[in-house]
Image (cartoon, rainbow, N blue to C red; front, side, top):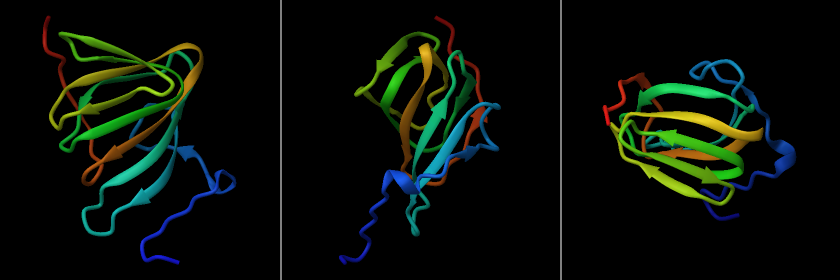
Length: 124
């Protein structure tokens, strides 16, 4: 087996409540880099779920797997559906909302340790 190879069958995914997200979200940590502590995780949220305005000190990427996500940046918004991808630069304030009938599932990745702090959205 090549060094560093990580194979994660769906049957081994264990979703749990997140201590850093509002109640209702579940996540599965897929991978953490032992040097940078960057992560990749799967996140599931129910319909009408909202994460209030916040920002991260690291770049964050989203890849939507199921459902629809709306990202509100204050001066603009982005509606993402299954298959869509977005890179959110470090220090960018945004609000996340699950749209549609059945919530959403997406993969997130950070290029360093995960952190999150409340933030104000820029005024349009």
